[in-house]
View (cartoon, rainbow, N blue to C red):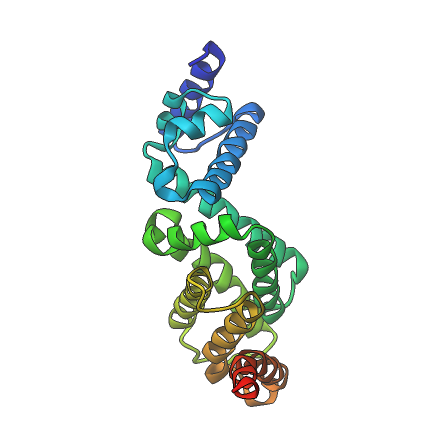
Length: 239
């Protein structure tokens, strides 16, 4: 470890002990580089094919630095996965800042776009989201973000006052995780991925949406189901 790295690590550790992690701009850039490298290597080699030594070497840091920051490979990869999810959620919030349903819909579109842009990384991350959900912090992330979307929907008088919020948030999280996993295993095609996510999320929300506000979601659901049905229509025309 270089003298500069050692100094930064001590500063960061002291900040954590003090109750808040305050990173220097250099440390922020270095962590971003580490997480980006970890994501890329995960896509290229899979979880079992990635080592802390390789991530360190290709990030331009010494291996000890990774252990000082993250502790284990599991935690490092989980941090990379969480960074990826947080990026999509932030972008969705910017796309529809005052529209709860619009925010959820934007998330599904943005997530699919990012997955299809780099499918190797996305398929590797799908496994991480499932097997290391607690480390990634998926429940916490969706509690805040999906909870915020539901708040906006309630303010817009889209949801019934008695809607089961915690159940809805959990089912949205599971719907997103399941969609990514099924796609990574080839059970969903690229064309079906977003429609599957829309179907699951709309079906979760509809029982709690006021009848006079269901029109837009029902239209989305019909379109998504039609896309999913094409697989069987195509088969019937070729037999």
